[in-house]
Image (cartoon, rainbow, N blue to C red; front, top):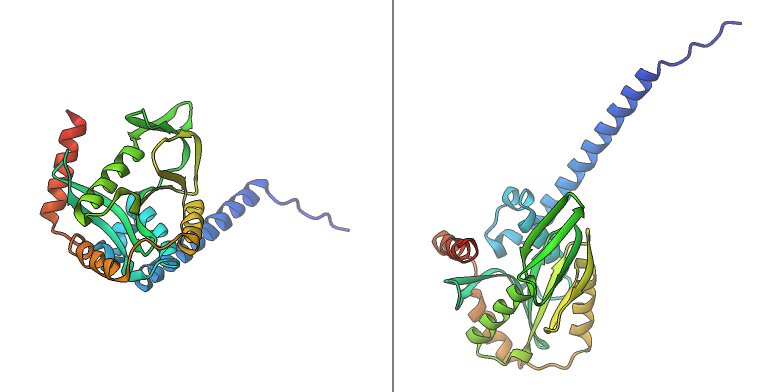
Length: 244
């Protein structure tokens, strides 16, 4: 009886690598097509002024997009505003990632599409993103950042500060470690942020009248989809502030 030939381990390894590569490419293609369809279905471009490829390959916009697709399931789509520019005291403008308007208040979201471990508190000017002991990244305190956003909203809409709810939403890939805050800021990952907001919309007492909501929607709408000149002016003023 003839002996069976043993399969060459190199061939097996090569075959496995090729199959893995093909499956990985198929998965990425399916994911790409899914996000492409979702992008147009949710009218993200109409809301943000950002095209699909710019969104897909920019970490910040992509995180905003993913959070927005969850948010429109609990807010009326017309009540959500993206990339809003309001006057600011310390820089020419302040850019707000997402604002949601509801009878229970104005919800202001700062989106951080970060992975790794996140450390920080109110007193720190910079927070820290850690992947390992060799890979760390500092970023501006998001509590302070969104506090400036809420104050800009408060001034622009002429409403009390307790009508505004601040949320810092980190990617689900992040691990929030030793995060302390005395401000009225909700600091969570995307999943928990959506869950908390959803519960609040259902259980909180209404504090805004229908007429107020309609007025705020009109006022906020004119502060989105602004010109590239205003966006560049904002970027320049931020760079001057934090790089000097």
